[in-house]
Image (cartoon, helix red, strand yellow):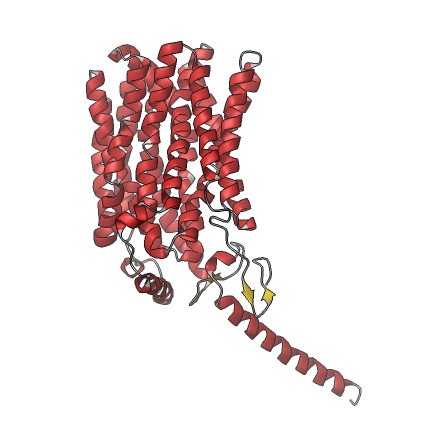
Length: 482
């Protein structure tokens, strides 16, 4: 007994010490900003509260998939015209410049509801606002399949842009009602994967519809999808946790308490005028970067099927399948670049690298296509991994660099003005191809746009969006420590 007593006492003392250290470590973790925590941790932490892990699956599996599929449909209705352009140009007697303008006029309408859409979603209801837009953009998308002149096509594309323009900011507002800051970056990123996934799904399907029927059937059938999804959206989406019946009372209270505390921090911040946010140098630089990125990406997205069909005589279905391949790599690139950026707490370099990678791969395609079409296709397939992959770190910069009172309106301005690149990119491709008859010169223009965006990124502050490692009483705590 005398032998075991000291051992027993020692074990008791060690257990007490361990519990004390765990308590101190728990307190230290609860004081850290959520951006310092890795996604793999068992607890999601905000500055004020700990969110139990049991809350995760319900919100991630309820809000994200419904929003994901909804915007996938929106992106399909926006981009399915890329496969239809060759046959539409013949039927409507559009030259390449007119066809590029018709594809891009969408974005002039898209600008109009960016900031009002976010305001209505916040002040009124994201659920109701998006439900209305589902109906309106469905009507406009179906209308694109019923037109008989290129002028009518331009009008319907513009109206479709107006209808879809309010959806993006409304969903961002919706996600902010359901995901605290420690989860919001991942929630936004998983939702944004709908962009490449939409092309992966729609390209083979659209090619099959075009091969079996025609562009009118394609635009009308895919344009009708919002009417079906409206029922799902209305049944599954709630604006706030207190309106949802599918989470427990305890979970609802924990989540809303956390969101209230975060909102209180924003309310205490000194308000900054809209004009001051617009004139912030970081905002102006980011507008230029996003304008170049969208010019390159949308020019590439809308004209890639036509370029493939022009290079080799292929069926519509084969063109659709080949168009999907680059966007599979795009989805992979978006995940890898965002994760690497979070792991290294660095944004500017990842944005610059992504744009430079996309521009370099596009230029490589131009240089090798005449000698090896296979290598040219490999090069063009790698473009989106960088040019779309930079979106995650890019949209992290405003919230991590600008004051809280500025970041919301700044993101609206960046998105609204930057999306005009979706007009200028396709228009530039159509104009250059009309003048030269060679898509290589057109895609060289897009390559230069992406490289220009990479150069503009270097004008941002050296640590733009970077998150310093947290310190507490002289000792650092990295996200990997537990």
